[in-house]
Structure formats: C-alpha cells, structure tokens
Length: 328
Ligand code: FA5
Image (cartoon, rainbow, N blue to C red):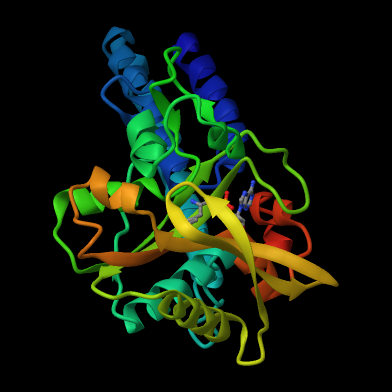
C-alpha cells in the first residue's frame, strides 16, 4: 500500500513537470502513450492492485483512479490549448500574397535567344547540339589546318589525350564539317556552342566562352551576301546605327577572310571571324568547289553580349553574381 502511495506521488510530480513543457500535439500523444499505453506508467500501476491486501484495496483503488483522472484531464486540457493556438495563428486569407520570384535569364542566354531568332528569320536552321570534345580531324585537319601547320598556333588548344588526337574544341567551325559530311547542298545552318582555349581570363578573353557558327552553301554565293548578312545581324542585335569594321584577315578554311569589329567603349572590339568557304574544305567533305560556293562566320557571343549590354569586363559574365545578373 505504501509502495502504491509513493509511486502515485512520484508519477504525479513528474507528470506535472513534463506536461507544462509540451507544446505540440505529437509530443502530447507520446506523453499519453507513456502513461496510458499497454506498458504505460499508470497502466502498470493498476497491475500492482492485485497484491494489495483486501482491506486496503478500496483506498488504493481510489488513489489510482484519482491519479488516472487527473492525468487524463490534464492531457485533454493541454490538447485544447494547443489546438486553440493553431486557430489564432491560422492563415489570414485577406492578406496580399507574397510575390514568387521567377528567376532571371543570363545576359548570354538572352543574346543567344536573340541571335537564334535573327538566324531563323534569315532562313538558317539552328543546330543546338554539337560535341565539345572534338577530334583533331574535325577541329583542324578537315578545316585545312594539317598537322605542324603554323596556323595551329592561332588557337591555344587544350588537348585531352596524350597523343593529341582529342581536344576541347577551340571553335565551333568543326560543326561545318560534321554537317556537310551528312548533307548535300544547298544548306544554311547556325550553330551556337561552347568553346575552349588556353587563353588568359582577362577583360576581353575567357578560357571557356561561346561562339555561334554560321554556314551558307549554295550556287553563286558572294562576299556581298556575307557582308549583308553580318550587317543585318549586327543591326538587329545592337541597333540600326551600328557601325561595323571589316578587316582582312586569315583563316585556313576561308578565302578571302575577314575579322569584324564594332566600336565600343572607346575602341574597336573584335566580335567575329568570317570568310568565303575555302575550296579545300569543300573537297574534304566531297562537295564540288566548282559548283558550290559559300560563306562562314564565327561569332564571339560573349563579346556581343558585352556590347549589347555595356559590360566592360567579360569575367562578370562568369562570376554568377546575382546583383550583376539582375541588372539585365
Ligand atoms: C575563329 O574561332 C574562327 N573559327 C571564326 C571563323 C568561322 C572564321 C568561320 C571564318 C569562318 P577567332 O579565333 O578569331 O576565329 O574567334 C572568333 C571570335 O571569338 C573572335 O572574334 C572573338 O570575338 C571571340 N573570341 C576569341 N577568343 C576569345 C576568348 N578567349 N574569349 C572570348 N571571346 C573570344
């Protein structure tokens, strides 16, 4: 009997301390099980009743029932309190919603989208997939740049195999070859893509940057067609007053060749290389150079984004600084 009395007191004390700290319904349910579960503390206490002498059973039963009712009522009361607090915190559906941030297109993405639109408008087919790891053949050889030719020094190449047969493409021009091998002329393609060079990361150079290749093959294509096409691209992208400078240049896969610059930030910034497709390139893909002619160009898309948005340092395009990106 004394054992029951002291256990009842002990449980009551402990319970009163614990219930004061319970603040959510899950914890409250765990507490209920702790006391009233199959092996619960109150449940177990009732099992002791068997061993209490007959004349004390009534008193012991009263003590236990008192404890049971007390604990049960305290749990029920606490449950009501917790549930009432939910109602107080419930959503106020009359409040205006919080705006959902929808993210932002990177300036390079914006320029790519615009370039693709212009290209499509001019009848070019946009090819969005092309390999970034290339073979020596497509990046150089088929573009009239044989092994040991000094023209290879124009590109600071990143080879990925020791035998120098595989490399990270230095330009998008390999896609010219890949496409012409598979198709017959006439064709008009526009190929945006990422390219890699062992260039320093400075104000106007990145070691990984973006180009967009254009190739137009048909009968009687002239340099005037090339010039007109590039001027149209530039005016659409930068505005109708844009001035371009064509400077004679050299690429082994075009003849004649030119580089084009746009006046920007107090100087001429080179944005692309271009020219008339070299007969050797047509021969490499099995087109008859007597019958077919064409032009090709390779845009420096980062430089175009710099001009379009007035970005003075190419590195900003790759820093992923959200404060910078949000300006465009
Ligand atoms: C080429 O890559 C030739 N494939 C372009 C071409 C295509 C010529 C078709 C003829 C026919 P170039 O190395 O000049 O050429 O690069 C083209 C453009 O990419 C440059 O005008 C410049 O705008 C940009 N560019 C070159 N290197 C970098 C760099 N490290 N970072 C950012 N832009 C660059």
